[in-house]
Length: 217
Image 1: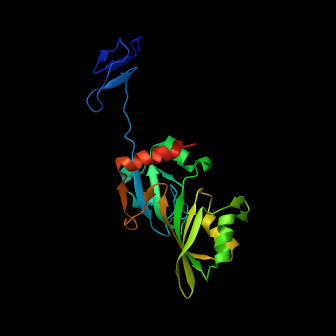
Image 2 (image 1 turned 90 degrees about the horizontal axis):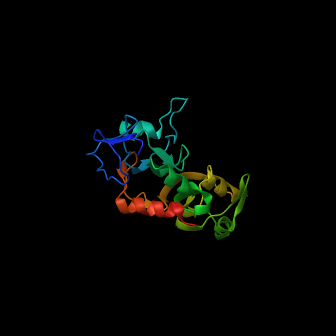
């Protein structure tokens, strides 16, 4: 700064600690204007059949096709496969996004699972004790039956990691396919009554809660 490389509103800064007001003062370094990027977090209700990716070489719809262009720079936090629906978080805060997805943080993901057939209590116990998948042991933090139907069983299942197709693979290990899968919650953020294809900005307190989850030990 003392070398004269920094200027504020056209005046070279000679002192450390000068305060600037975002949106009013123009800060330049070596003649280049420095702009701050507003941190954004949105909750999006991903419909089934839509890919969580930037583009689909086969021409299918992606989440970015459904979002407005100004949100195109945001990255998704935790992928949902094509048939899975529900809560998808997107942000431009890479550090917090990485922290939330790190296995050591144990951030909860809650799902509504419609499983084919009658799921037994023994199967529920197996899911919480852990099942062996090709990429290691997978355990549900909790699982409970919400409803039993003639042809299927509806469950609420919580995981603390985000491996590829983990819920579906776990259910197959206990003998049940999945006819519907909805992510209801990621950490402290819930899907609520957000309709499929709709999105909303996260509130300040919601963003703070995600930052706290991303750095907890």
